[in-house]
Amino acid sequence: LYLYMEDIYPIKGYPYFGYRRGRYTKEELQAVQAYAALFGIEVIPAIQTLAHLATTLRWSYADQMKDTADILLVDSEQTEAFIAAMLDSLADIFTTRNIHVGLDEADMLGTGNYLFQYGYTQRRKIMATHMALVERLCKERGFSPMVWSDMFIRPYSKDGGYYNVDADTVQVSEPVVAEDTTLVYWDYYHTDSAFYQRYLAMHQRLASQVAFAGGAWTWCGLAPNYSLALASTDAAYTACLAAGVQRAICTLWFDNGAETPLQTALLMLTYHAFKGRKNTLGIDHIRWFNTCFDAHWDDWLLLGQFDHLPNGVEHNASADNPSKWLLYQDPMLGLFDYHTRHFNPSSYYTDLATALARAAERSEVWRELFTYYQELASALALKAEIGVQLRAYYAQKDRSNLAVLAETTLTQIRARLHQVRTLREELWSQEAKRFGFEVIDVRFGALQGRLEATQRRINAYLNNEIDGIEELEESALPFKERAADSNRLYCASSNWIEIISANTV
Image 1 (cartoon, rainbow, N blue to C red):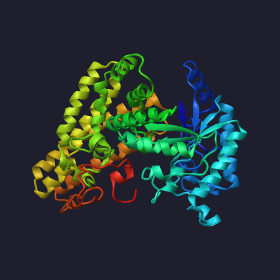
Image 2: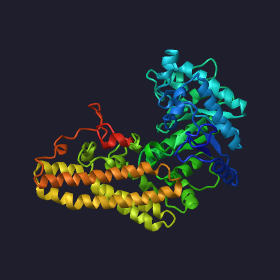
Image 3: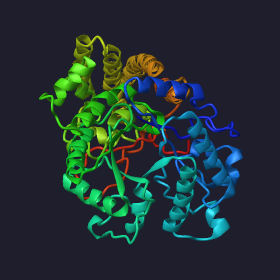
Image 4: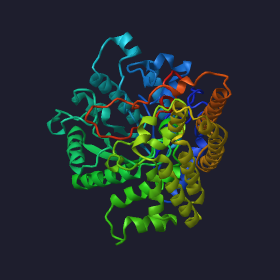
């Protein structure tokens, strides 16, 4: 088990590291290891030693070791002391001497304080300097590190991308990491096995030890993207087995609020495990999953339908997440209303709610999970078209239907969303510490506030207190501009801030 921790573990001398973030205590981490050991599971710390550290670099103690808002300053004494303290703490807490040190997605490396202090330096050189430091500090403490590979691949791309490199042409005179460092190729986007084969071959030229990391696609918003997760896993594991890769990881990320309940990952954890080993049991993955978890595979696949809409991209490979933007978007501003014209969201989510109700009845073990998603689907069925309806009735000067929306429909939506929020809190409390739920709570609170504001605005208009509702007078545009020949119907936005308003939040 690779336990991913950015700033949620203790470091002596750094009290603001993980402050108010629900960080683990030393005793908790030791308890996790002891429990895992009962089943022969090794718990490996997975941390960050370069980027993805915005939550701790926000505090003033980090000013002297910060390059940009989320990246450490390379070639700094303060940074070296900080990473050394990280590793000292983990060496004291963990029994394993395997460690994942991160180093991914440092796209703006060298462009902040580093640029002012040292001038422009190629990212490749900065990475080499920092990698040497991290490897040395790990070696001094007996750690064998793993590192994400993207920052070592991006220099071979014309635009700094990770997946647009001509993998067949990449050659190196010496490995990009030390011999005992494992280079981890992470990719959960492609559904073509040949792509993974080319990239794995490239990685095997760059390092003597290579591992692969796929994903469960639990991070796009409110529900998992099972379709893409299953298709990408099939393609990736076929390539991994052909390339002789010995280690493969199923990653679970909590992007932008950790809104998807953790237990939804069980389906993909099972599938990764099934695909990654020889099937000597003579059973298929569906029977295996159903038996292990007292579950019904087809019922769980319903959760993937929240975002995989009719006539959308195959396997939802574009990671469209309408359930998130339909839930949170402002009822009067409707930044995503343009995209609802391609399907009937009220009918779609009503049917999904009915199917989920049947799933909840069938499953005693997972009833709370399915009840939550049933309520969410029911809420979406009510709310998804509210902005389109408001704009239409307003344009038609249909005061009667506007009154019904204000007095009845919006009140029903608010009541339904209160239930959704309550059920989500119950699931959160089963899976996590309380820290972090305030983010989801604030989002539901903001949504309730805007629904109340919509009622006030409509009533003010109907009572002739205002001459018009200017928020409803602009035509709906696509959320993001696209090429004229694009046939993509829907869109993706996992960032709550850009969903709720076009203004600065």
